Length: 210
Image 1 (cartoon, one colour):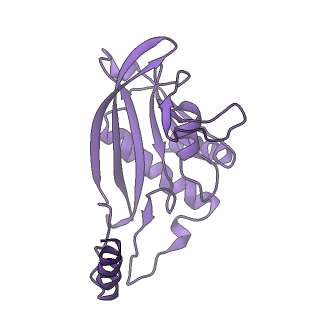
Image 2: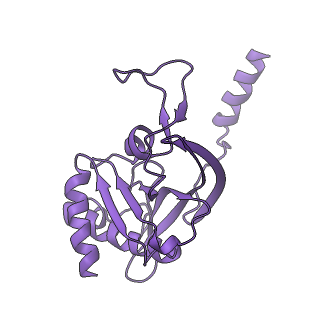
């Protein structure tokens, strides 16, 4: 059986008919969960999705992957803060802020930071989800975020990969996210570690100016 399966997959790929995997550029998947934070059980909604970055003509030039957590049964969503979270980099997705610090789940690690068995995640009793909703954003070409070629196979890298370009397209993306999720009235906070620190300072100014 093992020989047959190996041969079958080898032949499958050799014939060039392997399934091509693509993420939709604009989609969401929503699930329901619960977690205990500071001794309180909290029900929350997790939304993972992709949202486009558009050029000046309205053409998608990138699709950014994000994970958005909202606490359930909130009476006044407008009064509830929204925390926008980035990792460092450039070249780093939001994985460590997500799975090591502020998210509702963290990796199973020991006191020195090494993975422990059984591998996986556990509840994060120190998550900030009890006091704020959170969106973890993966910048272009990190995590599952990808740039989209504008002509043929070419991507205009100057629109994404530079200090000012990084700030400009992320600010535009965040404006769209806040609009789509009806969070304009919510207090907003932006957090980033390492290079995420300079990024969020620039983003704060760019968003205020817009």
